[in-house]
Image 1 (spheres, rainbow, N blue to C red):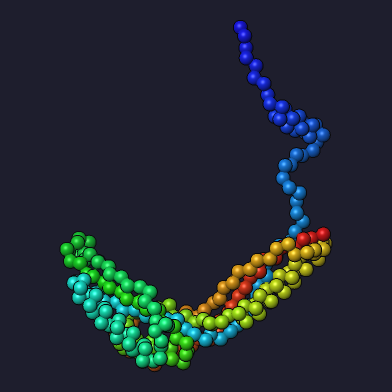
Image 2 (image 1 turned 45 degrees about the vertical axis):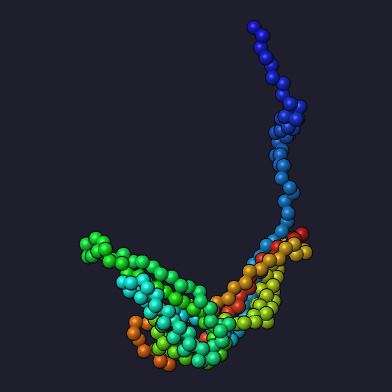
Length: 240
C-alpha cells in the first residue's frame, strides 16, 4: 500500500530547529522588542479663580388632558419668562432654547389598571447666561414670578480660563518632576530625557438647583465662590 508523505515547509523546520537549540541551551526565546527603561508619573496642578459668569437652565412645565391646551399655556408662560429675563438686561444671544418636549402619560388607578385617561406634559427649557453675577438672583426671581417652575443646573464658569490653565499647568509639571525625582532617587536610577507628555483638564464649577412648587423665591441668595481649574499631566521619562 502506498502512503502519501506530506512535506514540511523549510520555514517551519527552521523555527522548530531554533526552538530546539534554545531549549537545549537553557535560554528563552522572545520575539518582542527590547524592554524600554522608562518611568511614568502623574502630576497635578490647581488654580483658583473667581467666576465671571453663570449659566442657568430655566424651564416651564405644564400638564393638561388636552395636548393643544398644554402647549398653548406653556408657550404663553415661556414667552412671559423670556420677556421678564430680558428686562434685566439679558441679551438675546445669551438665551437659548435647549429643550421642548410633549409627553403623553397614561393614567392608572390604584390597582395599576389603565383608566383610559391621558395627561399631556409639556416642557420648555431655556439656557440663560448671566454675565453680571450681581443680577443672577434677580434673574431667577423674575423668571419664577413670570411662570417658570423648574430651575436646575445653575453653575458658574470663567469666560477666559487661559491664565488659570497656564498656572495650573505649570504647577502640574512641577509636581510631575518632583515625583519623578523622588522615585528615581529611591530606585537608584537617573532620569533622562522626557519621552512623552499629555494632559487632561477639568474644572469644578459650583452647582445648585431647585424646583418651585408655588414657592416665594424673592431675593434668591446665590454665591459663586471660587472655581478650581485643574490639570493633570502624564509624563514619561527615560531612565538610565
